[in-house]
Image 1: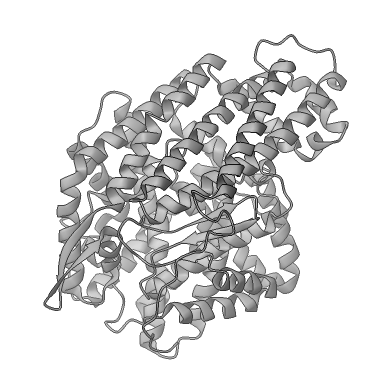
Image 2: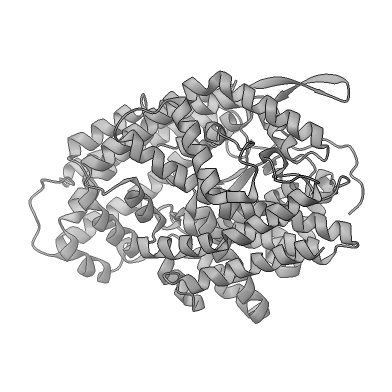
Length: 604
């Protein structure tokens, strides 16, 4: 890869979804959504789709109701999620956009109405579970949605009353959802003065965080210090937001009969506690290897222990930098070595401006990929800084996009993929690119640099993700007793980092404010977001090893897996490849691949 040239980093194009938030097309879509929702509401009233309706005699009586309900819900969801995604994409790159925030709030009201329809349907279906085999046998939409129906009926045992669920849904807009918006607004609008090369520039927090990987050690340390001081200024409102969201979850899960917040998370992830336990046990056994890597990194930097601000340091001071177009070419080329179809997908995403890559004030940190259901397209947001790590991030997010591409033709309900399996294609695509970069290294320094980038990412997903799990678990346990102060939250964060990183990091320079800017902690309906990333990394790594063994014959089965992730539990889908995720052996084998890279790094 050559030295990057200065170029404009792209913003995405959303105009083929709707021309603008104030366009007639957008207004027409909202009106149509309202009409379809009213039709669905009338249908459920007409057929008494609620928890107290008298029971029918057989499957023949309820099959037409279920089939019609599924067809209507899919139609409503297709429109609602397209509108909701469109407004969210606008706010995600510009939290100053008052019109977008107002439109988002308006669309969220329709989400409440949808929730208020789904709850009575779920309760109604749960009381008719004995009829489901007969309904499914009769064919129609029910047969192609068998997994959804069975899972919905099973989960109906964890519902409050219809009135309570309706109230909880309405209150979420001014409760947990509002706290979530506060965190996003506060974090996206922070800008700080930062002196570099004798010049003071105002950096959005996303750009300041990107300095974690700056080649200059003085810049890294200064950015770390400025970052911590900045988080101190907003920690009280963010602590209030976290308390509000976790407190609401504790109350609701208890009222719904859940054992804890993790219980609901596991059901959403479509795995069980033995699976999570097997994976986490294997991860814990790998901590010494990661600590060995971190100590070796500290030694390379001439330090007795590694401070947090050097955790993302490049291996060499002249670490490679890429222009966006160079990153694009590299990703497309490497995807093509796996599959022409994957390369074509990525090329389309770049050329049709589906990617928003420039860091700027008002834009969220991190990266994500969103599906546009009505168009069967995706959009990728990232904060590209020219690093190899950000190139890997784009490949990762395009993997999510390819996953959405493989779900084409499925209904919205059939596409509902759990986070555990949602990370499969993204990890796979990132592995394709990172392995290619490593194989093309032309010198010891370049090989070391690529290994460093790979191990930084793996350390985050295995070690740091484990610390985040411990953190969230402790926060939930304490929040059930009382609100937590900002000091307590910071203390839990540091304790969790010490428990996982151990002597791999300098305990005097940890990051007590990691909880402030990770948006996942503030998602009202997505608790314990963390372990699915580890699941995705290790599951994707295992699949990549199978691909290396099988070659081209692997691709059809892989695409079929991606097309089915919304219609099966993780263990059942993994068994198609002879993988048993309930035993530690599979997880140990995937971690073994990473440990080989650690040994390779140390030998260099």
